[in-house]
Image (cartoon, rainbow over all chains, first blue to last red; front, side, top):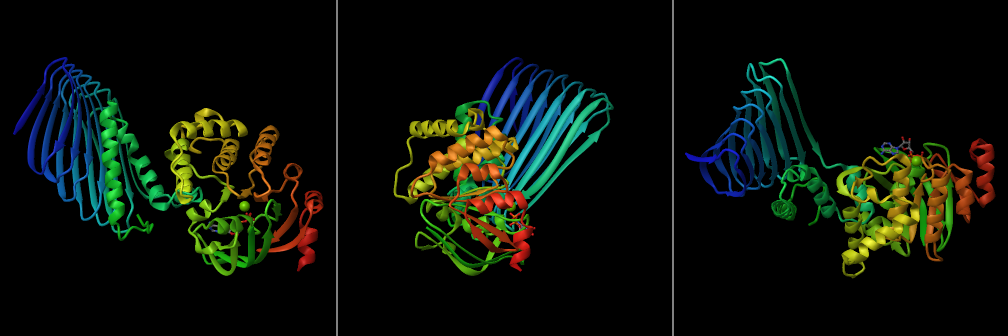
Length: 252
Length: 249
Ligand SMILES: Nc1ncnc2c1ncn2[C@@H]1O[C@H](COP(=O)(O)OP(=O)(O)O)[C@@H](O)[C@H]1O
Ligand SMILES: [Mg+2]
């Protein structure tokens, strides 16, 4: 198991490229520390992550899943100290036979903590995306706030998405919201763009990019954000160049 | 410029257009009127190639080309533009990026290089001022959170940027107040040349005043049942459609 600790009042921004294989990671944020973690999962792997946040600490995680295999991520975040905050953002761009499974739990153990999950998946070909997000508010974790948003966009008739936001609340003074949507590319928007002369593959690309953009906007640092945006675009173009079953018959 | 012959079209298996014939020459403006549901928007969508609408019979040629053989984007590159009766909202795609993609795709079709960024932004500013569209709309999603009137201004703004040779205005005047209509109509007129033509769908006299069309046509139940000059438009504005629709059967 790899252990990392952010010392009290420390601030750190890290970009990590996750390799294949299996990982077991423990992260610990000491009081009032802050970690911005931007991860790209370019190779499929089995990952287990445990995060502990102490009083007043903050974690912002953005995870981009772009591999071509079968991956599984299990993450458990414990908000242990008062006023700790976690923001989890994820974008999955699936093609081929990719299967991405993400199982996230955020546990509010102390008072006045906030958690946010924003996960988007764009699934083409025969790819599969499974998202399960659980927010657990312990007894005594009053004034907890949580928000869970899962959205999936299917760009092929054979892709499948599943998104299950769940709430388990044992405290009474809490504000928790959750929502999940599954949709396909908006035909009216596509046609509107084509009428203006934008070729169909380009129009698909713009719509897909718009779909995941709010996840990328979680990345504060402009350099990293541009890098992530470029990776996503590359992936969309790769997806198009091979898509045989795309319902929009784009000829990239 | 445009010639429609015996055009039949269906939507969701239901026949809507039932033999439309229409010729529009270079530099001409034609107004199309007709009761709600007569097929005016259907005709517009068929012209620009919306895949929802199925052409079951007939032909359309545009500057000598078989329009029906072209995908919508190529029709746009050939000079066709439609101001939508209901412009579509595209959250997350800014007007600037949208128009950059559209304009550069057209330039590519014409064998030109993309427009340099500075020139592109200058072009947007100039055209925005032409139709009185505020700068703040450029960085928002296309039509996202625009009011009805702002969307219609936005359509003519896009038209100004893309410089089509044939424009279809599908009830662009509805949703605009008197002042906005004047700005938009004047903007439209300033873009006209001896080579540009338009098909304007409207119900209102004010639009007839501004457009000064060469011809006015009445569509009823999927056919053009009467054609005339501007006076026909004023007669309809005054008396409604019943007297024409009734006679035509
Ligand atoms: N996208 C569509 N789906 C289903 N029916 C449609 C669609 N568009 C038009 N129609 C039908 O076609 C007929 C003509 O509509 P339309 O062309 O919009 O008329 P107009 O513009 O003259 O009011 C109406 O009966 C309408 O319900
Ligand atoms: Mg209509």
